[in-house]
Amino acid sequence: MEKKAYHHGALKETLIIKGIEMIYEEGIESFSLRKIAAACEVSHTAPYKHFKNKEELLDAIMKYVMQDLSEEVLRVAKENPNEKCLLAIGIRYVTYMMEHKDYFNLLFLGKKQAMVTIVDNHFEYEENHPFKTFVEVASKFLEEMIPDEKVRNVAILQCWSTVHGLAHLLISGMVQYEGDYAKLAESTLLSVGVGSGVCKG
Image 1 (cartoon, rainbow, N blue to C red):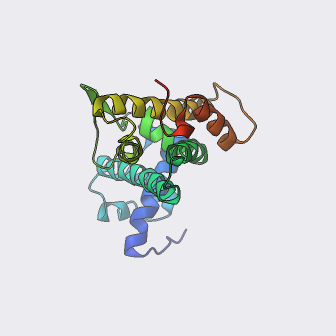
Image 2 (image 1 turned 90 degrees about the horizontal axis):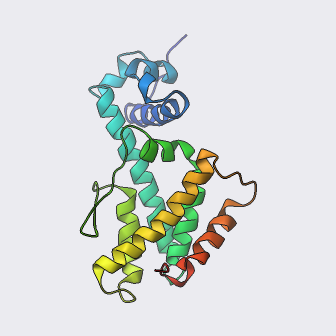
């Protein structure tokens, strides 16, 4: 079969996207640059023009997914610059994950997880972690309501736990739901007070 000709810059993103699909469908154990090259219909040496090895491609995949989610959180925040911001972000978090189940599995269920560490009620994470964006946006809207940073971070963690937990239950199939995910997320978030801009303590 004749190999497809890719623009130099386009192949890199194609490898990342195809890598995400392959990890979701086959698992990270069977992941390899050779298999990615075959899936993209390019020579087995083509990926090495962009990535030194499999680990480097995996790191690029993680950064790509985290950046995409972070940008989506920021977009929603800009479109909802009011007390409903957290509610809008929470709803979009759930619907986004349902649209990109492979992203959720890669970020939070795989061997290379996007970790969050809590030290004395402070969050530590990678610079491009999507939770970082969530924390920054939430802090902006909760700062006056909850001036104590430690208490505010606990509230933010509760808010994130609500949407993240709901997404996990739906994606894993532990909760079967055939209705509107956005409406389910909205009612769940409102029940813990996210609609008022703060989670119930």
